[in-house]
Image 1 (cartoon, one colour):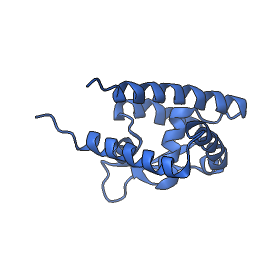
Image 2 (cartoon, helix red, strand yellow):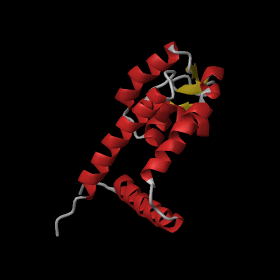
Image 3 (tube, helix red, strand yellow):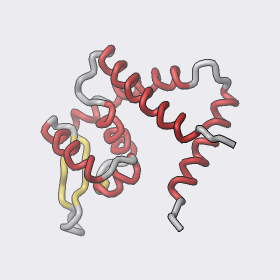
Length: 145
């Protein structure tokens, strides 16, 4: 049996990223890009986390995050502060400017949801998201033998 799930997921991600950027542009939101939006989203859920935790939650590699975080700090979206208990660890905090952007992000995210689930029933959405979550669990639990 030929399986195309991985290809389809990759294609969906590519298309979704392009559309997300287009919607940002249409709404004249230039304070962050799509990748930065993923970082902001994670920090809106839990502010003051380590770079490692951000990497785990966002799915972005630490090497990719380094440059992005530097840029976001220059844009005054985040602050990097040394952990008081462990000086080797840097914690990431949102600025007031970043907090003020959450409604913009949510409006783009809502539009993306409308596009993704156009024509789906609520029941189909719930079932589909269960399947996606199982795939995520499989990938996170995978260990090369």
